[in-house]
Image (tube, rainbow, N blue to C red; front, side, top):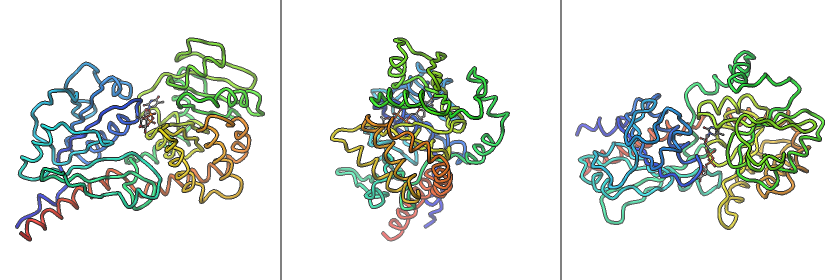
Length: 396
Ligand code: TRH
């Protein structure tokens, strides 16, 4: 039997994104969709149930359009009743969102069963490796879904990384003119060389006032850049402003704060590359901070029963394994105190004292991670399933 079709890479892909809250779900799906189009030539349809969130990341998206093309991706409002469509060869259900029943039925009706992937949340926990790529046969229908776990180790699905990103980052970080243009685009002067530039993207955090005070009274000038979002009211309160918004600035002693607009997704990378330390949250900004190759502080998405703190520990264990001396402890202390929202101010000086070592580790870590590319792994896996199915058919 000729099985070339089964072995070739899929030509079409449907990605389903149900937005729970915030921007992480759509952040990951939008990034993946564009990457599959641009770098792998797939025809991608992104089904998303909240276009306003997409429009924050991609301002040219029309939040009122049921169907539109954005950056080569066909964006469809995930609406009910779900339209009758031909399923794609590769179907990605992001973060276990439930596919419409009519779409599942249409998958069954395909001559060739689509490759159905559940793209999971990112975690550094050990169990991820043993669950990655596991099949989950449908209880009633002749369909199998596969779990696909992003991750940091070779036996996981890896991370989303655009082609040439690291080279673009290095070029930006070497080139004073590109940086100047970036600061200008934000309506700012290039910060002085001795100023510590900190980006702050976080959820509400009780440790914030103490940290702001520490920066204000610290030995080095700090410029804190806060994109509009959940932490901003806390920043405003600290400076006695009930209506903080993009464009506003606050100053106290050695601390300057600049509120930024929420920028489009691609430009957010520039902010991370331009800063010396990045506070990030959730999933996608957490990964982008790692590609930035700078020291970073992660506020994990809070879950019930403090499950998230276990995930935080798992990442710290992995990352700090190669962080010599006091740097590992300094990083753990700051991350833990930031996540339990108490004590981060006390942990900051030790973290700041270890910038050299933290920078070195951040660069090495980013280099290591480039070896495990999620989009490539996903397409390889999809081909692997095609081959398995072809062999099965041949054997019948
Ligand atoms: O918005 P988040 O808190 O998303 C979270 C997590 O993904 C979490 O795991 C999930 O369960 C929950 O949502 C529902 O953080 P995250 O993942 O960093 O997503 C933010 C996105 O916003 C990311 O793609 C970067 C982007 N961004 C911009 O495009 N412009 C900006 O100015 C900023 C600050 C962020």
